[in-house]
Image (cartoon, rainbow, N blue to C red; front, top):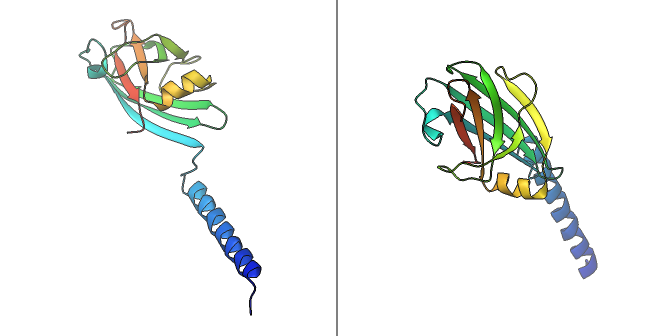
Length: 152
């Protein structure tokens, strides 16, 4: 006859193996809960006020919740001229403007790549969808294309 303690230990062992297997599968499938990946469209219509442009783009971000490191790649085409500046702005919901939170540095030709370590407050705004990406040109110094950074 199996004792209660032996049965309990066996059940706990099976549960632990099952949970660790699930965690491994999630990380292998890109569902690591410490990372948040988003891909969002940039358009002139999202600018405030809206801008008529043939320019479009995307911003792909990955946010590591365990280190507060944000990495990004911004791609674009069809703008009225070279990008003169680019930033993440916040906190702001769609339809509202906000100040620069993280500027893009270095070469602003497409694709723009970078990373930054965020403060706890910045991380909270980013993960709540209160940041947007913005690209500026000489013709549109307030921004030519913009996109809200959301998990949707």
